[in-house]
Length: 92
Image (cartoon, rainbow, N blue to C red; front, side, top):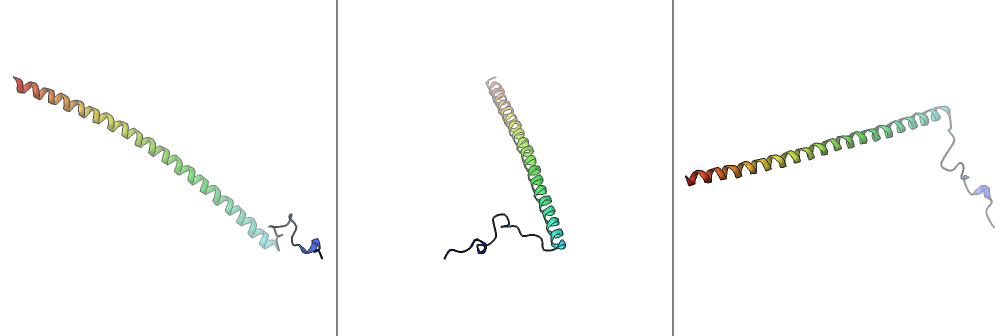
């Protein structure tokens, strides 16, 4: 015999949600929902801060790499000039 629809459990509308048993439970759930929402937003804000800090640090790193390359090129040019001058002095 097929089962009747009333013995199949909760309907889709109420499934996953149970009505608050009393005002205290309702208040606790409401406070928990507020706290969870606040925590999630705080976590999102912290991630955004960290991402911004990461971008800043990467920009600084890139600037330092460029500065280093320029200084290395300058040092190489000065070494070359020094060697040329040292060679001229030995020829005299």
